[in-house]
Length: 202
Image 1 (cartoon, helix red, strand yellow):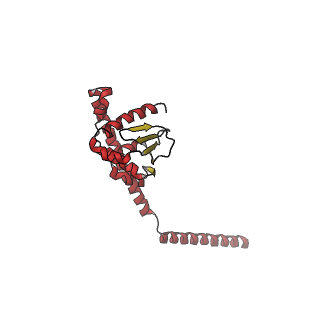
Image 2: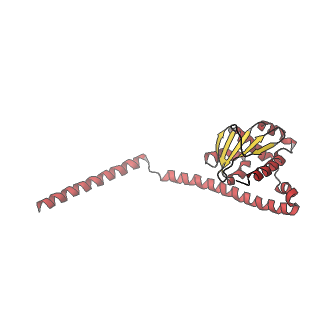
Image 3: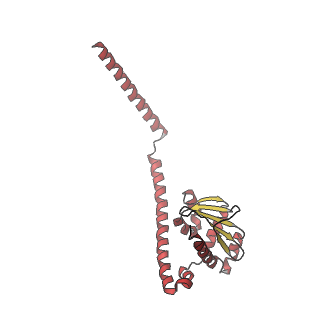
């Protein structure tokens, strides 16, 4: 993907502004120091790898060593990572596939949760104040809609599983059905035998 270096560089700037400017987040950052968090997104062939340091985070697209935590998911799920209380639920429902140290992902989610995200402030140096505010509002609306869809989807999946479970026949019902099928089969065989006898007697 030709745009990946640009995406990685932009993401690095955004994450450093979000996570490394506020001194109050220093203790939370220390927990991630030296950790490597790898994201494999269904829409992209190239992974996004976050390497957390003392004063910065490096965003890479290749890493020779094993990451502390690898997360496989979709782009639409990423905004929900800020809601760290939902992580376990999202993993159970298949929105996140996590391999390695889950605590690494939880600590990253905690950092995102603590960060005061102001999209307009991050974009202003490149776009200007008015354009940055407009883009920020548009993105915020779409993220809100995506999160709402995710929550609705989770609810529908849960409801579907519950409904299917209710509709599934019990062991007793399955045994009764098998007996009925055997009975119909025997009746069919008896009828076929009688027809053969009748044909032979003509």
